[in-house]
Length: 130
Image (cartoon, rainbow, N blue to C red; front, side, top):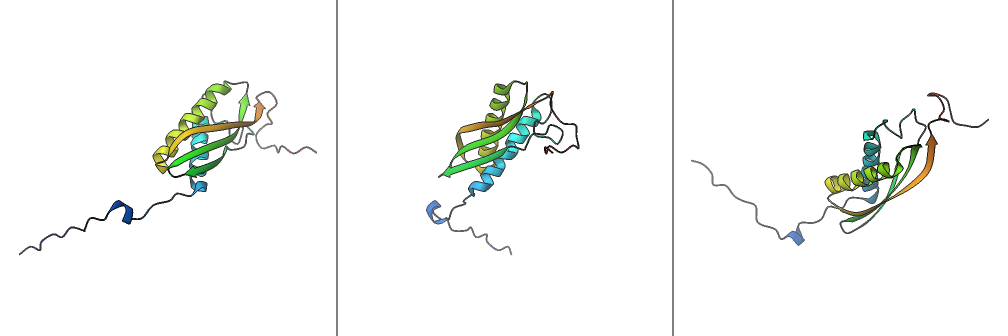
């Protein structure tokens, strides 16, 4: 004799609770997405150990399910800066929407420093002035 299956009672959506993703978690997702976008560009990662560029940094403000993202990054120069920024905007918006299920209406980018390919220090040398 088999036992009858019981189904869980339906709970109204308002009574189920909520999942909240911290702003700092969304910022980490955004910074990682910016690194991915820069690594996918021709010439390799702009924030790699050989370029001397710092890793992208993100700040995020979340209101309901809408994330406003600001990315600070350093880029190599000369290069197509507009294309790099467009790639970062697209990748950041896509990854935050996928991973955090948040709408991203805007991604602001601050280019804090340009690294010349002609003045780059060899790998392994520190950047401090003496």
